[in-house]
Amino acid sequence: MKSDSLVIIPTYNEKENIRDIINAVLSISEHQFDVLIVDDNSPDGTGAIVDEMIAEQPERIHILKRAGKQGLGTAYIAGFKWALERPYEYIIEMDADFSHPVEKLPEMQAMCATGGADVAVGSRYLTGVNVVNWPMGRMLMSYCASAYVRMITGMKVCDATAGYVCYRREVLQSMNLDAIEFKGYAFQIEMKFTAYCMGFIIKEVPIVFINRVKGTSKMNTSIFFEALWGVIKLRWDSIFNKRRFERKPLPKQLTA
Image (tube, rainbow, N blue to C red):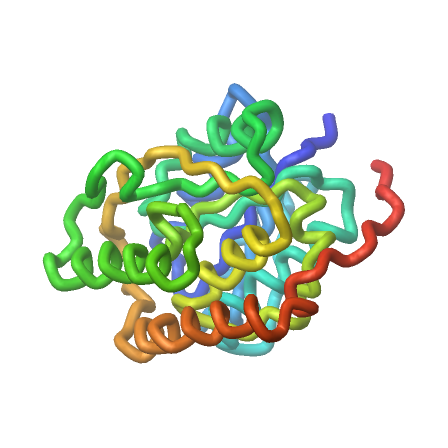
């Protein structure tokens, strides 16, 4: 049976997690999800592990290999373009390190399929602060960043920096993905704000975010400051460069 839902997982040095996270996604019984790994030439052999798994389940596991580490945003853009070349209706961003609860995937997909959302956000802050094992400084930085985004943009999303997101196909088709500017922390804000400006409906699904146990975090202060100034630029463009947020004509629907 062909799946209508694809989970995109960008990776760089995730050998400790990659086999387990793929198996966890494939084992979900409520809804079938395919997996696309976008690997930035991980020197630890992440891509080789995925290749082994593809040999066992080529219909459901896929990999897009890139020449080197090029940033989170460009990894997702490459994954989105790959997905749009195929008949997936629901396209989901998720981290490889189990910080995003895999068991929430059916609820995220259902929010877009039957819950009236065009974009479903796995939200750490919808019902308070639901983050486990983060240093206090990082938690405050993330929470304040989302509050800052709401204040500057007017977008009523509690967790604007969230990286656990489900998009209806039409949302990504309507965007000029080549015009998405930011590569790091601000990428997640830019995607949500672009969808918001285009008139798409964004809803949040509460999750508990658990800090990674295995592997190394890729977060750094330069990524945070990109978001700080990026939000101001996004708001400026929404006022003075509105053509940036115009919907593209939808192409003909692909068939399986």
